[in-house]
Image (cartoon, rainbow over the protein chains, first blue to last red):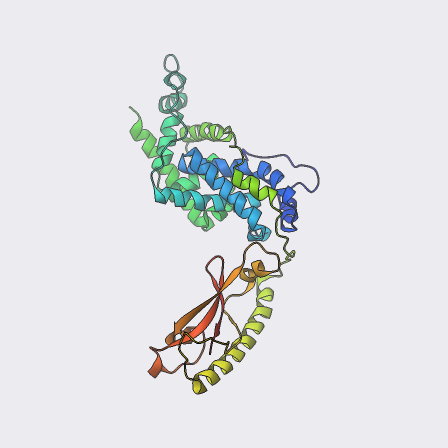
Length: 194
Length: 162
């Protein structure tokens, strides 16, 4: 996992913190936020490309957890997946309501993308020619379900099971969406090449 | 195991993943800070039994409640003319639960969310949907009822009024 956090001292794992929250211990929310908010925010950011929306959705997820911690059921998945699922709804609602506005990430500096001379390796050539801005643009052009699957599995390196739980879909549906997302992304990037 | 995409694309995705992982977390918003400052409503720790076993007590309670309400409603509709809405209304039946399980948990004492008792009029044909008898010849008429409405909008229970 990219956002892997080392296990903390006893009682500081997410579920223990959540149990304290359910028992009325508000001090558990702060460590829970520091532990879980990063992956939730980055998931929302990669989905919508708008830092403000992503921040709002992340905050909403934690406010929901703070006000009604019983909404999370440990038997149904991790607390990170639960929070990401709540944030996903927030992003989706914003996305349906209006245009994205500011886009993340900003375009790369041309000098960073096109290094001096042509790279000898074809793979390197492809990477340098297309650059991350082209990739992000292509990700944004994917239909929402495909984009979501790609962000969860390829950009956040979540397991298929966790990704399916967050997206609220069956495992096979996730696999299909991911396959189509990768294919569509590759096609899009190939078309964008000069 | 996840099946990796084609190599060049996987390289790009790897770079994008690293770029994404490097994004700093925005500061906590005042709303979350406020939520942190507010004491969380304690709730009884719920150890869920397996789903089927958990459903049984509710199912039995629901069936008993349904029977009680059915009898009460039958008596009510057979003998009681419908008074005008302006008159003070007394309950004519117990609450008929329409939702079970987790939806009731927030109603525990001290919970952050609550429920509202909303007075309304139900078309008689809707009684059938609640499992209550009604006269099809008077399906267009209404009966007065109170619904217990959860903060989420879910109807938890209904009771008929005189």
